[in-house]
Length: 316
Image (cartoon, rainbow, N blue to C red):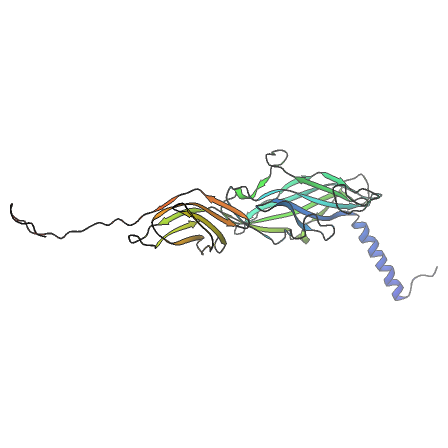
């Protein structure tokens, strides 16, 4: 056989060599990844990597760069419950031993801390020759699902991560994944592949609020210049507000919070206001605080007059 001296032939040979080396380096890894989150609208997977038809969650559930919304402190309405990693391997020559989720939560104005980790146990193997997972989805021989979804009340080995337990502020939830295995053995676990968005990781934002009510009475008797302020909300966010005025339902009203984080209900007269609720991104916060607005007290003033004798007519 003659050696390859022609430039095109040499280029083809070099390309084949590169492809061969790349295939070897990628003989195991991840196909798709997603975190599992419960919010006020759904409990489902939010995709961090992968393409159709291999997406884990609904195509509309995109995690990276998403704003997960506004939530009230300690409401338990935004919870990280786990993740899934779908992996591939060459069953004849490589191995996948496990997968992990790494996550951290931090104030956007603060310094990110260290990552927490969560092991993802083997959940499903590809069914060959049907090339489908028993739990749904197409696959190839060697594909596997690694998944953990943590139910409420679970403590060990992991508890659900209640993102509303943090103090009021704007936060980032940052995640990446790790797959362990071997490129050259069907039994070893001596190599690690990172799924970390090219080193940038996957990040979504959310906000925590702590609403409270402050009231101001009308300045004139039977006036309508009283107001109620719901403080401690997210500046610029738009809320759906409902309440009752002396037992009569009012709302829904659409009110945007001002730059100080206040939703202000204006043009109020004296009366009993109660059953306040704030709605945003599918979540409703009930404020169990009643407010009584009162007419101002009128303090009369009298002019002085000189003494007068008993029996005389008093001055008017």
